[in-house]
Length: 130
Image 1 (cartoon, helix red, strand yellow):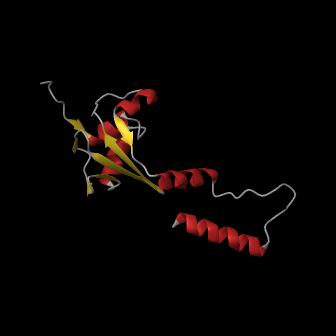
Image 2 (cartoon, helix red, strand yellow):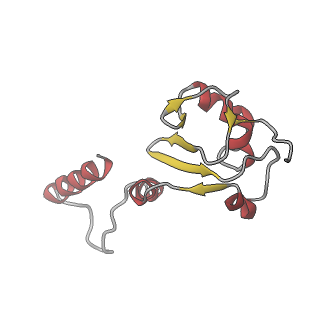
Image 3 (cartoon, helix red, strand yellow):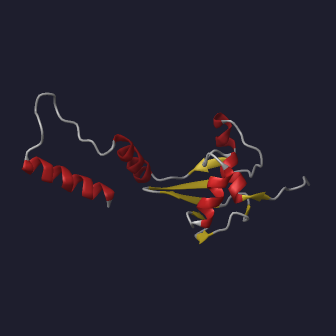
Protein backbone atom coordinates (compact mmCIF):
# COMPACT_ATOMS: atom_id res chain seq x y z
CA UNK A 1 0.00 0.00 0.00
CA UNK A 2 1.03 3.55 -0.61
CA UNK A 3 2.16 5.60 2.34
CA UNK A 4 -0.77 7.84 3.35
CA UNK A 5 0.21 11.38 4.25
CA UNK A 6 -1.70 13.18 6.95
CA UNK A 7 -2.91 16.53 5.62
CA UNK A 8 -4.15 19.29 7.93
CA UNK A 9 -7.48 20.91 7.05
CA UNK A 10 -6.04 24.43 6.89
CA UNK A 11 -3.37 23.30 4.43
CA UNK A 12 -5.91 21.36 2.38
CA UNK A 13 -8.30 24.34 2.11
CA UNK A 14 -5.39 26.48 0.93
CA UNK A 15 -4.15 23.85 -1.54
CA UNK A 16 -7.54 23.51 -3.29
CA UNK A 17 -7.91 27.29 -3.49
CA UNK A 18 -10.87 27.72 -1.16
CA UNK A 19 -8.84 30.32 0.76
CA UNK A 20 -6.10 32.59 -0.57
CA UNK A 21 -3.65 31.92 2.27
CA UNK A 22 -3.15 29.18 4.81
CA UNK A 23 -3.35 31.66 7.67
CA UNK A 24 -6.81 32.78 6.53
CA UNK A 25 -7.88 29.12 6.43
CA UNK A 26 -6.54 28.61 9.97
CA UNK A 27 -8.38 31.69 11.24
CA UNK A 28 -11.65 30.51 9.69
CA UNK A 29 -11.26 27.12 11.41
CA UNK A 30 -10.71 28.84 14.76
CA UNK A 31 -13.81 31.00 14.20
CA UNK A 32 -15.90 27.85 13.69
CA UNK A 33 -16.69 28.48 10.03
CA UNK A 34 -15.29 25.14 8.85
CA UNK A 35 -17.38 22.07 9.65
CA UNK A 36 -16.60 18.44 8.82
CA UNK A 37 -19.42 15.93 9.14
CA UNK A 38 -21.45 18.42 11.26
CA UNK A 39 -18.59 19.02 13.76
CA UNK A 40 -16.68 22.31 14.08
CA UNK A 41 -12.97 21.63 13.80
CA UNK A 42 -9.54 23.01 14.64
CA UNK A 43 -6.92 23.86 11.97
CA UNK A 44 -4.86 20.81 12.92
CA UNK A 45 -7.64 18.33 12.06
CA UNK A 46 -6.55 15.69 9.53
CA UNK A 47 -8.53 15.47 6.28
CA UNK A 48 -9.68 12.04 5.12
CA UNK A 49 -11.01 10.84 1.79
CA UNK A 50 -14.81 11.18 1.18
CA UNK A 51 -15.39 13.60 4.07
CA UNK A 52 -17.96 16.37 3.62
CA UNK A 53 -16.53 19.82 4.37
CA UNK A 54 -18.88 22.76 4.92
CA UNK A 55 -17.31 26.19 4.51
CA UNK A 56 -19.33 29.14 5.80
CA UNK A 57 -18.56 32.26 3.82
CA UNK A 58 -21.48 34.54 4.64
CA UNK A 59 -24.05 34.68 3.13
CA UNK A 60 -23.27 31.32 1.47
CA UNK A 61 -22.53 27.88 2.96
CA UNK A 62 -20.37 25.92 0.53
CA UNK A 63 -20.21 22.11 0.73
CA UNK A 64 -17.38 20.01 -0.68
CA UNK A 65 -16.57 16.29 -0.74
CA UNK A 66 -12.89 15.37 -0.51
CA UNK A 67 -11.93 13.11 -3.41
CA UNK A 68 -8.24 12.96 -2.57
CA UNK A 69 -6.37 14.92 0.14
CA UNK A 70 -3.41 16.89 -1.21
CA UNK A 71 -0.63 18.84 0.40
CA UNK A 72 0.66 21.15 -2.32
CA UNK A 73 -1.29 23.97 -3.93
CA UNK A 74 -2.63 23.09 -7.39
CA UNK A 75 -3.78 25.12 -10.35
CA UNK A 76 -7.41 26.12 -10.61
CA UNK A 77 -8.05 23.67 -13.45
CA UNK A 78 -6.81 20.73 -11.37
CA UNK A 79 -8.92 21.43 -8.27
CA UNK A 80 -11.81 19.29 -9.58
CA UNK A 81 -9.60 16.19 -9.25
CA UNK A 82 -9.36 16.68 -5.49
CA UNK A 83 -12.74 18.09 -4.35
CA UNK A 84 -16.33 17.85 -5.55
CA UNK A 85 -18.59 20.87 -5.12
CA UNK A 86 -21.87 19.84 -3.43
CA UNK A 87 -23.16 23.37 -2.83
CA UNK A 88 -26.94 23.57 -3.50
CA UNK A 89 -28.17 25.90 -6.24
CA UNK A 90 -30.05 28.06 -3.71
CA UNK A 91 -26.75 28.90 -2.00
CA UNK A 92 -25.09 29.73 -5.32
CA UNK A 93 -28.02 32.03 -6.13
CA UNK A 94 -27.35 33.95 -2.90
CA UNK A 95 -23.79 34.50 -4.10
CA UNK A 96 -24.95 35.81 -7.47
CA UNK A 97 -27.38 38.16 -5.74
CA UNK A 98 -24.61 39.45 -3.50
CA UNK A 99 -22.35 40.14 -6.48
CA UNK A 100 -24.97 42.30 -8.15
CA UNK A 101 -25.30 44.27 -4.92
CA UNK A 102 -29.03 43.60 -4.80
CA UNK A 103 -29.53 46.00 -7.67
CA UNK A 104 -32.87 45.81 -9.40
CA UNK A 105 -32.91 46.52 -13.11
CA UNK A 106 -34.96 49.52 -14.17
CA UNK A 107 -35.61 50.68 -17.70
CA UNK A 108 -33.75 53.76 -18.81
CA UNK A 109 -35.70 56.95 -18.33
CA UNK A 110 -38.08 55.63 -15.67
CA UNK A 111 -36.38 57.62 -12.92
CA UNK A 112 -36.26 56.73 -9.26
CA UNK A 113 -38.68 54.14 -7.87
CA UNK A 114 -41.86 55.45 -6.28
CA UNK A 115 -42.60 54.77 -2.63
CA UNK A 116 -44.84 51.84 -3.60
CA UNK A 117 -42.22 50.35 -5.94
CA UNK A 118 -39.54 50.76 -3.26
CA UNK A 119 -41.64 48.80 -0.75
CA UNK A 120 -42.08 46.01 -3.33
CA UNK A 121 -38.34 45.92 -3.96
CA UNK A 122 -37.66 45.73 -0.21
CA UNK A 123 -40.13 42.83 0.17
CA UNK A 124 -38.44 40.91 -2.65
CA UNK A 125 -34.98 41.45 -1.14
CA UNK A 126 -36.18 40.33 2.32
CA UNK A 127 -37.71 37.12 0.90
CA UNK A 128 -34.51 36.27 -0.96
CA UNK A 129 -32.27 36.83 2.07
CA UNK A 130 -34.41 34.51 4.22
